[in-house]
Length: 80
Image (cartoon, rainbow, N blue to C red; front, side, top):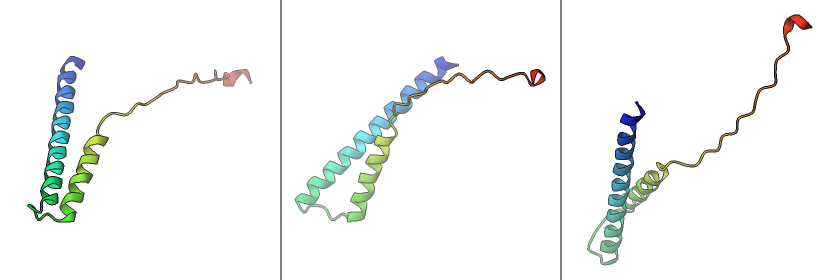
């Protein structure tokens, strides 16, 4: 079962990277065109693109540390 998941996970990660790269490219293109006064975009459009870029960055897995603590042995209720 895990063998079928890995290609899908890799495909999903690849797709997310491509989306992020595309959004980044669009943002840079808009910035250049705004600086040259070739584009009349609203500030809201630009902000939404920047927010989308940040959301796509957040999809990357984060490091999670887990510590296992052995439970204390329970006393037998009949012994007390």
